[in-house]
Image (cartoon, rainbow, N blue to C red; front, side, top):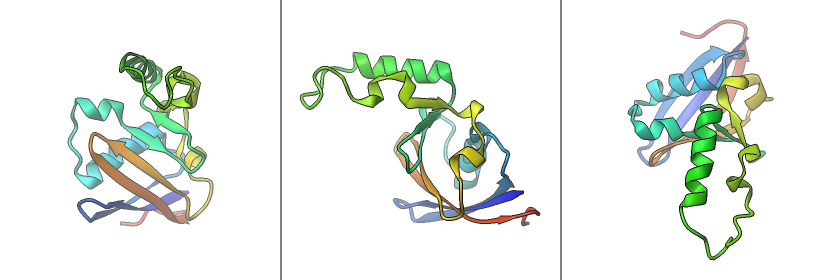
Length: 135
């Protein structure tokens, strides 16, 4: 089974398309998305995010998640959340990309997610399913 995606960067109005196997890991999907949209591979790409409609946040792996959460804790106190009770301060709010597939992220046609890396935001929408890859 292949998933067919429309990609859009609203800031640059750049669009892209991907056709990839449904069982692909989210980690591999992120590499494909970066290539298709011409995003730079920088230090910031290590801390990219995928946020789905259920507000689950997917990051590269457990080490990156732990580092990111530690950085949030060390980043100073927020007047809105002085005791750091928001979910973003807890590792169980994040999911490692290498342990999930696109089937976990895109349950049906029309599902969309946000990919964020540095200042780039890419909206990705599942537009079709097929048994063959489109050229």
